Amino acid sequence: MSMKSVAAVASGSFWKVRTTPPCSTTNQREASFGAWSIAVGADVLLNFAGTLQAKGFVADGLALFDRAAETAPWEAANFRAQGEAYLTASRRTGSPLKRQEYLRHAETALARAEVLDPLVPDNHANLARLAKWRADLSSRTPDVARRETDEAVRHYTAAARLIPANTLLLNEWAELDFTRRRDFAAAEEKLQRSRRLDPSFDYTYAALGDMYMARAKAGVGDPTENYRHAAAAYVQAWALRHSLKAAVNMALAYEGLGERERAIEAYRQALAMNPPMGTGWAYHERLASLHLGLGDRPEAERQAQLALWNAPPNEKPRLLERLRSAGLAASG
Image 1 (tube, rainbow, N blue to C red):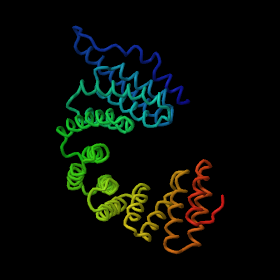
Image 2 (cartoon, helix red, strand yellow; image 1 turned 90 degrees about the vertical axis):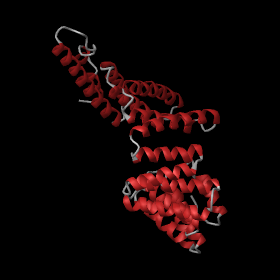
Image 3 (cartoon, one colour; image 1 turned 30 degrees about the vertical axis):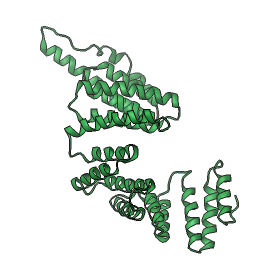
Image 4 (cartoon, rainbow, N blue to C red; image 1 turned 60 degrees about the vertical axis):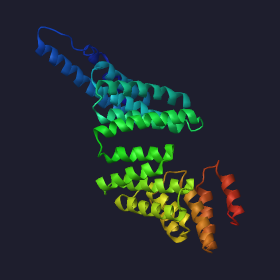
């Protein structure tokens, strides 16, 4: 059965008889069973919806998330799942119009989940993530970005009251502090607290590295110390879990420190992870520059050629210009 057929079955007449919310009757047992069966039907719809979205059938998946929320509108979890699905879709679409539509649906659903169950931390955290994403999208309109950032802070604060020792929440909130509010002290305090709570969480070290890199870029404190702290944090993140992000960020931090050999090793680790097509060429370009700085022209030329071979067509003219400006004779 195709995924579209699954969607048709899941949203068809089989469930229509179960979409009426429970009413008061003299037989409380029947009413309770009716509510339970409707909730079970909504759960099945949610499972189908998640499968469809994961398979790339975005519209079909979102339609089933909508249907699940309509089926049992007294269940906060249904609106939470619906809102999370629309928030995910807003991050993946390339259409600005669709993105705004998805964000509106996400806000409506997540706000309803919060009203229905204000004691569930995820209901506040999701609204914080929505506001943070809107702030990121509004970078060119500072007033809007500031308003959305304040909204995110409000929701993170509400979530943290309910689960003050949640490391994921602390890390996300810290990222908001240093990316949107430029409050590096508050960000560092949250991340260090998160690290003490769970020293094995690689995300915490990656966020610490990002925070120190942001400090260096903003000219806050000694740049060498910032790069050194960033490199140490990324090394720890890499030790806990090998990831492309950790490897590339290690390389950038080492470049900031002027440690070319270490930067070269980190970029090679990144390339060994088979980065997505259309990104690896940039690491070859950096390797070309680093080897040239070390006086290894043959390897620099080889890396320059690899960068050109792997670069997307629209990037090649500018890449070729940069390589030639650096004194490399690579040809496309």
